[in-house]
Amino acid sequence: MIKVLMVEDERGAVEVFQNLIARHQDSFEFLGAARNVKEAVTRIEEDEPDLLILDISLPDGTGFDVLEIIGDIRFEVIFLTAHESFAIKAIKNNAFDYILKPFQSTEMNEALRKVKLKLEDNTKKNGTKKIALHTQEGIDFIKIEDLLYLKASSNYTEIYLIGGEKLLASKTLKNFERLLDHPMHRIHNSYMINLKFVKKFDKSESSIYLETGKSLPVSKQRKSSLFQHFTKEI
Image: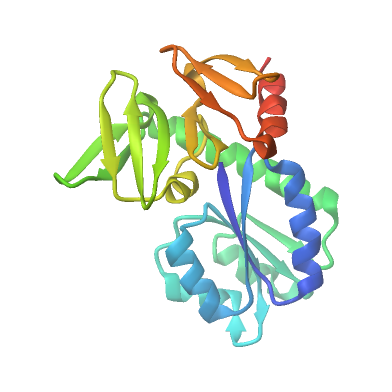
Protein backbone atom coordinates (compact mmCIF):
# COMPACT_ATOMS: atom_id res chain seq x y z
CA MET A 1 0.00 0.00 0.00
CA ILE A 2 1.37 3.40 -1.02
CA LYS A 3 1.01 5.90 1.82
CA VAL A 4 -0.03 9.40 0.65
CA LEU A 5 0.18 12.60 2.68
CA MET A 6 -1.20 15.88 1.35
CA VAL A 7 0.14 19.30 2.37
CA GLU A 8 -2.61 21.77 1.52
CA ASP A 9 -4.32 24.58 3.44
CA GLU A 10 -7.39 24.86 1.17
CA ARG A 11 -10.16 22.62 2.50
CA GLY A 12 -11.86 22.39 -0.90
CA ALA A 13 -8.72 21.03 -2.57
CA VAL A 14 -8.27 18.47 0.22
CA GLU A 15 -11.85 17.25 -0.16
CA VAL A 16 -11.51 16.91 -3.93
CA PHE A 17 -8.31 14.90 -3.57
CA GLN A 18 -9.75 12.76 -0.77
CA ASN A 19 -12.70 11.79 -2.97
CA LEU A 20 -10.35 11.03 -5.86
CA ILE A 21 -7.87 8.92 -3.87
CA ALA A 22 -10.76 6.90 -2.39
CA ARG A 23 -11.23 5.37 -5.84
CA HIS A 24 -7.68 3.98 -5.59
CA GLN A 25 -7.96 2.47 -2.10
CA ASP A 26 -6.59 -0.87 -3.30
CA SER A 27 -3.21 0.79 -3.98
CA PHE A 28 -3.11 4.04 -1.97
CA GLU A 29 -3.70 4.84 1.71
CA PHE A 30 -4.59 8.50 2.34
CA LEU A 31 -2.97 9.65 5.59
CA GLY A 32 -4.82 12.97 5.62
CA ALA A 33 -3.60 16.53 5.15
CA ALA A 34 -1.19 18.89 6.88
CA ARG A 35 -2.10 22.57 6.64
CA ASN A 36 1.27 24.32 6.97
CA VAL A 37 5.05 23.83 6.93
CA LYS A 38 5.39 23.03 10.63
CA GLU A 39 2.59 20.47 10.62
CA ALA A 40 3.87 18.95 7.37
CA VAL A 41 7.36 18.34 8.77
CA THR A 42 5.93 16.68 11.88
CA ARG A 43 3.58 14.45 9.88
CA ILE A 44 6.29 13.41 7.43
CA GLU A 45 8.63 12.40 10.26
CA GLU A 46 5.87 10.48 12.07
CA ASP A 47 4.01 8.84 9.16
CA GLU A 48 6.88 8.31 6.68
CA PRO A 49 4.75 8.69 3.50
CA ASP A 50 5.70 7.21 0.14
CA LEU A 51 4.10 10.08 -1.77
CA LEU A 52 3.67 13.74 -0.86
CA ILE A 53 1.03 15.88 -2.59
CA LEU A 54 2.60 19.24 -1.83
CA ASP A 55 1.09 22.67 -2.31
CA ILE A 56 3.78 25.28 -2.89
CA SER A 57 2.03 28.25 -1.23
CA LEU A 58 1.40 27.65 2.49
CA PRO A 59 0.39 30.01 5.33
CA ASP A 60 3.80 29.89 7.07
CA GLY A 61 6.10 29.37 4.09
CA THR A 62 6.35 27.21 0.97
CA GLY A 63 6.42 23.58 -0.02
CA PHE A 64 10.09 24.06 -0.85
CA ASP A 65 10.67 24.97 2.82
CA VAL A 66 9.18 21.63 3.82
CA LEU A 67 11.62 19.72 1.63
CA GLU A 68 14.57 21.81 2.79
CA ILE A 69 13.79 21.11 6.46
CA ILE A 70 13.30 17.37 5.88
CA GLY A 71 16.56 17.18 3.94
CA ASP A 72 16.69 13.43 3.25
CA ILE A 73 13.83 12.99 0.78
CA ARG A 74 12.72 9.35 0.75
CA PHE A 75 9.39 9.86 -0.96
CA GLU A 76 8.01 11.01 -4.29
CA VAL A 77 6.63 14.55 -4.59
CA ILE A 78 3.78 15.86 -6.71
CA PHE A 79 3.66 19.66 -6.48
CA LEU A 80 0.40 21.61 -6.58
CA THR A 81 0.24 25.33 -7.32
CA ALA A 82 -1.88 27.97 -8.98
CA HIS A 83 1.21 29.63 -10.47
CA GLU A 84 3.12 28.31 -13.49
CA SER A 85 6.15 30.39 -12.48
CA PHE A 86 7.10 27.76 -9.89
CA ALA A 87 7.49 25.02 -12.50
CA ILE A 88 11.26 25.30 -12.99
CA LYS A 89 11.97 25.38 -9.25
CA ALA A 90 9.71 22.34 -8.74
CA ILE A 91 11.65 20.44 -11.40
CA LYS A 92 14.95 21.37 -9.75
CA ASN A 93 13.57 19.94 -6.49
CA ASN A 94 13.20 16.55 -8.19
CA ALA A 95 9.43 16.72 -8.45
CA PHE A 96 7.83 13.56 -9.76
CA ASP A 97 5.10 15.73 -11.25
CA TYR A 98 3.80 19.29 -11.25
CA ILE A 99 0.06 19.98 -11.42
CA LEU A 100 -1.67 23.33 -11.71
CA LYS A 101 -4.65 24.15 -9.49
CA PRO A 102 -7.50 23.63 -9.69
CA PHE A 103 -6.34 20.19 -10.79
CA GLN A 104 -8.32 17.95 -13.12
CA SER A 105 -9.12 14.40 -12.00
CA THR A 106 -7.73 12.96 -15.25
CA GLU A 107 -4.38 14.67 -14.70
CA MET A 108 -4.13 13.58 -11.06
CA ASN A 109 -5.21 10.03 -11.87
CA GLU A 110 -2.48 9.80 -14.49
CA ALA A 111 0.12 11.12 -12.03
CA LEU A 112 -0.96 8.54 -9.44
CA ARG A 113 -0.78 5.77 -12.04
CA LYS A 114 2.78 6.75 -12.96
CA VAL A 115 4.01 7.05 -9.38
CA LYS A 116 2.50 3.65 -8.58
CA LEU A 117 4.41 2.08 -11.46
CA LYS A 118 7.65 3.75 -10.37
CA LEU A 119 7.35 2.65 -6.74
CA GLU A 120 6.47 -0.91 -7.74
CA ASP A 121 9.48 -0.98 -10.06
CA ASN A 122 11.73 0.28 -7.24
CA THR A 123 10.48 -2.52 -5.00
CA LYS A 124 11.32 -5.14 -7.62
CA LYS A 125 14.82 -3.72 -8.09
CA ASN A 126 15.46 -3.66 -4.35
CA GLY A 127 14.97 -7.44 -4.19
CA THR A 128 14.00 -9.21 -0.97
CA LYS A 129 12.69 -6.78 1.63
CA LYS A 130 13.09 -7.23 5.36
CA ILE A 131 11.39 -5.69 8.35
CA ALA A 132 12.99 -4.94 11.72
CA LEU A 133 10.87 -6.31 14.57
CA HIS A 134 11.58 -4.87 18.02
CA THR A 135 10.95 -7.61 20.60
CA GLN A 136 11.75 -8.01 24.31
CA GLU A 137 14.93 -9.90 23.35
CA GLY A 138 16.17 -7.34 20.82
CA ILE A 139 15.62 -6.78 17.10
CA ASP A 140 14.75 -9.56 14.65
CA PHE A 141 15.16 -8.94 10.92
CA ILE A 142 12.44 -10.90 9.12
CA LYS A 143 11.85 -11.29 5.39
CA ILE A 144 8.44 -9.87 4.51
CA GLU A 145 7.84 -12.91 2.31
CA ASP A 146 8.03 -15.07 5.47
CA LEU A 147 5.19 -13.24 7.26
CA LEU A 148 2.03 -15.37 7.42
CA TYR A 149 -0.26 -13.07 9.41
CA LEU A 150 -0.22 -10.44 12.14
CA LYS A 151 -2.59 -10.23 15.10
CA ALA A 152 -3.29 -7.17 17.26
CA SER A 153 -2.57 -7.62 20.95
CA SER A 154 -3.27 -4.36 22.78
CA ASN A 155 -0.23 -2.09 22.15
CA TYR A 156 1.72 -5.04 20.72
CA THR A 157 1.41 -7.23 17.63
CA GLU A 158 1.77 -11.00 17.43
CA ILE A 159 3.78 -11.99 14.34
CA TYR A 160 3.15 -15.44 12.86
CA LEU A 161 5.71 -16.72 10.35
CA ILE A 162 5.19 -19.29 7.61
CA GLY A 163 7.61 -21.66 9.37
CA GLY A 164 5.43 -21.75 12.48
CA GLU A 165 7.43 -19.32 14.62
CA LYS A 166 5.63 -16.64 16.67
CA LEU A 167 7.09 -13.29 17.73
CA LEU A 168 5.72 -10.43 19.83
CA ALA A 169 6.59 -6.98 18.43
CA SER A 170 6.33 -3.71 20.36
CA LYS A 171 4.29 -1.91 17.69
CA THR A 172 0.54 -1.70 17.14
CA LEU A 173 -1.09 -3.36 14.16
CA LYS A 174 -1.92 0.14 12.85
CA ASN A 175 1.82 0.90 12.73
CA PHE A 176 2.44 -2.24 10.71
CA GLU A 177 -0.42 -1.39 8.35
CA ARG A 178 1.31 1.90 7.55
CA LEU A 179 4.71 0.24 7.25
CA LEU A 180 3.81 -2.74 5.07
CA ASP A 181 2.32 -2.76 1.61
CA HIS A 182 1.39 -5.53 -0.83
CA PRO A 183 1.26 -8.51 -0.28
CA MET A 184 0.34 -7.67 3.34
CA HIS A 185 -3.33 -6.69 3.65
CA ARG A 186 -5.52 -5.61 6.60
CA ILE A 187 -8.66 -7.78 6.77
CA HIS A 188 -9.94 -6.98 10.27
CA ASN A 189 -9.29 -4.65 13.21
CA SER A 190 -7.27 -7.50 14.70
CA TYR A 191 -5.67 -9.13 11.66
CA MET A 192 -3.37 -8.46 8.73
CA ILE A 193 -2.47 -11.28 6.32
CA ASN A 194 0.03 -12.14 3.61
CA LEU A 195 -2.07 -12.51 0.46
CA LYS A 196 0.48 -14.93 -1.00
CA PHE A 197 -0.62 -17.58 1.49
CA VAL A 198 -4.40 -17.30 1.02
CA LYS A 199 -5.99 -20.63 0.04
CA LYS A 200 -9.66 -19.66 0.15
CA PHE A 201 -11.85 -16.62 0.74
CA ASP A 202 -15.29 -17.65 1.98
CA LYS A 203 -17.44 -14.58 1.41
CA SER A 204 -20.56 -16.13 2.98
CA GLU A 205 -18.69 -16.93 6.22
CA SER A 206 -16.58 -13.74 6.05
CA SER A 207 -13.48 -15.86 6.56
CA ILE A 208 -10.03 -16.24 5.02
CA TYR A 209 -8.35 -19.65 4.95
CA LEU A 210 -4.56 -19.70 4.78
CA GLU A 211 -2.45 -22.46 3.23
CA THR A 212 -1.54 -23.65 6.73
CA GLY A 213 -5.21 -24.38 7.44
CA LYS A 214 -5.62 -21.38 9.72
CA SER A 215 -8.90 -19.47 9.30
CA LEU A 216 -9.24 -15.77 10.15
CA PRO A 217 -12.27 -13.45 10.22
CA VAL A 218 -12.82 -10.70 7.66
CA SER A 219 -14.63 -7.61 8.95
CA LYS A 220 -17.80 -6.43 7.27
CA GLN A 221 -16.18 -3.09 6.40
CA ARG A 222 -13.23 -4.75 4.63
CA LYS A 223 -15.00 -7.67 2.94
CA SER A 224 -16.06 -5.79 -0.20
CA SER A 225 -12.63 -4.28 -0.94
CA LEU A 226 -10.93 -7.63 -0.30
CA PHE A 227 -13.33 -9.39 -2.69
CA GLN A 228 -12.64 -6.72 -5.32
CA HIS A 229 -8.91 -7.24 -4.87
CA PHE A 230 -9.13 -10.98 -5.51
CA THR A 231 -11.40 -10.36 -8.49
CA LYS A 232 -8.73 -8.09 -10.03
CA GLU A 233 -6.02 -10.69 -9.37
CA ILE A 234 -7.86 -13.39 -11.36
